[in-house]
Image (tube, rainbow, N blue to C red):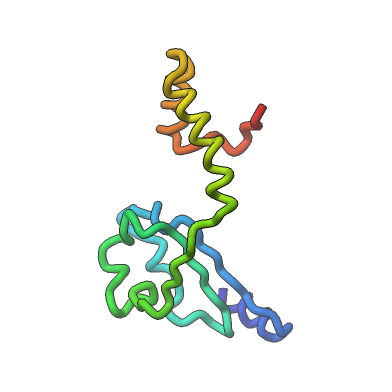
Length: 122
């Protein structure tokens, strides 16, 4: 990471590390602890996650970068996401009220937390 950040700095570029889904990081050893407190050579770190569930215990302490309220930016809801959400919710409602097989498939996808990456729609 230090070497990559330095190469980018020399090129007049900036290395950006993006970590999405920190709210899903509920293990004993949070990846949040691996984030650099002071990123090297102008590097930036962007972390995203919902505010619930909260970050693992200790991550919000004063000595952790994510504990600094000055770095937190709350984002407004997306109008596009709301438009896309409507048909998805309607489809879930239809499956939940559907046949036994539809309910079973909906339950399996829910428990699996999504479809496999190589599963094509249609």
